Image (cartoon, rainbow, N blue to C red; front, side):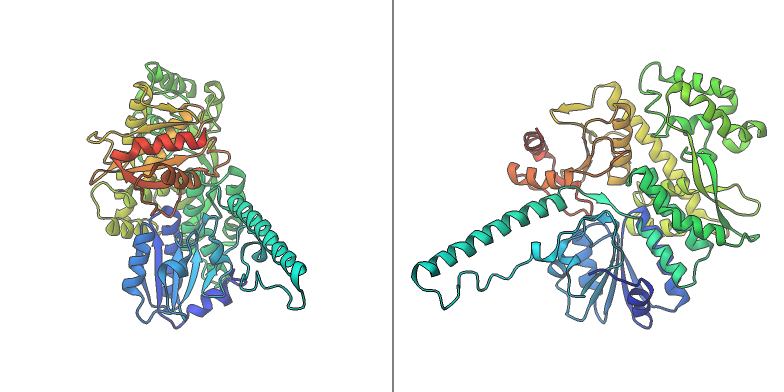
Length: 532
């Protein structure tokens, strides 16, 4: 069931109780978690925080931490599965689900109150209860007053009605579940709660801003929806008091990841929205980039310097120069209204940069996942020196460089293969890039880069190696930047049944799965036949 009043029917129930907070390993979930943590701290709500990476980890985390717990809050996990069936909780335990993964499991929607969904997305076309659930106890028991032929006809008619109802139910459920997609960022919902609770400060606004930027940067929502998602945040920014300490603003800025922490040339070379369009993987790619810089009026020496060491006049005219030169090279609009964190005596921090820093810590090459998660939370602090941010930015630059090398290698060596209805590529085990793109966040970044370089009109499947002879498989829909509804969730499940492959459908995002490397070929063959 859906929560009607986010403050009274959700947050106020947590006051005075111990809460189990289960948070998924993704950027939006980290941002929502940061806002909830600050709220819990203000109101002295004791809680246990456990980050989870999949359904099995969710079940383990609940089983190990459910003693004397009456309320469980799930952030970006649990919404797409039947929670009561999988977790088998006591009857008095209540789950509050704040999950941007869609579609929501129908059993959670029509729960009798044990599962409460904090937000209903307008896009969800949820089937009616009577079209999905039905009592069958008296199906073949007609009216006692009927005799002989009439009684038999009544039984046949009821069975015919039952069959028609089942066919309608199958069609409704197929239409409801055939695509996986993302709803409004959970961080935006958490920010709305902070506003209702009169706890909206710079920290909450910044976490909400980074959550909004995540869906835009990773193309999880259509561009128009991203603008609508940010509208409540913009209203909050207009009413905030601009103090001498940290505050959040909206300004036009270059949509270039980490350019303030890099050089202009480096940022352009590793931006997945620009570099594929410049075809930097081709032999003439470097000359195209130099021509772009020349059209911008940026000498090569200046463009290769660290941004903060560049000539002041060039820094001031960067946005204008990009906007002027982009159309000539058929690049997308290079500037957008962007959320920035401004602090005294420090350069502005872009929400886009923070997204990549958090991604790099969540899927860090060497850090344990739990430690990376805690550092990702620390990235969102708005006061004082932020060592976690510096570590995240450094790791993000390294990851973007690995993604660029991987994309260049696949595109230049014809590593992008055609399997009829979709393209696919495989990251080879043992390469320097394989360690960086072993997780779905950075593998997804590489997939978007390669899809953009090849027009993106076909679905794309990407695979990277995992330990113990397994591999990760990720599906990207066609025209992902315009309509990111993903067909691969249902397709992967059907292909697994047809191929007989031993797949692990454990990820919260159903368009991601794990299977043995030895069975990858037969699985892709089944997927090709299914989508043909």
